[in-house]
Image (tube, rainbow, N blue to C red; front, side, top):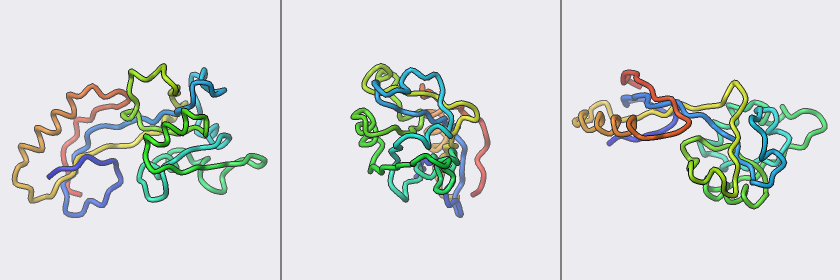
Length: 172
């Protein structure tokens, strides 16, 4: 039994195989004042109402760790940081489309066919926030060939916003 998960994970007793690095993008409503921007910096996010997954969701932690200006106490004087929490990325996507705020999404959650719908997706300026996605399985899992078939299927997928990795599995 393998899982696909973003780092960091508690990997004691597991084998871990890197799959890809995935970039993040900012999502704004189509009528938002930033909708025409080519890039956004992490510091810019502190100036807008931000929608994030609730506390305890690993993607929330990824966003906060990738954009230090969003952490409590690092907001520029005179700005008000407002964060609204949602229970799923899909709920947050609908809230952004309704004009409640903006959000940060992993590139693989963005459907290329919706690029001109109710939302606009804007890349970050460098350094571009990202995360590493891995496969993990028990060290004593007997069907390692099945793990490799799953890995090859993922690497053959047309995922946008990712850099596929050809790195060996390692003990966690």
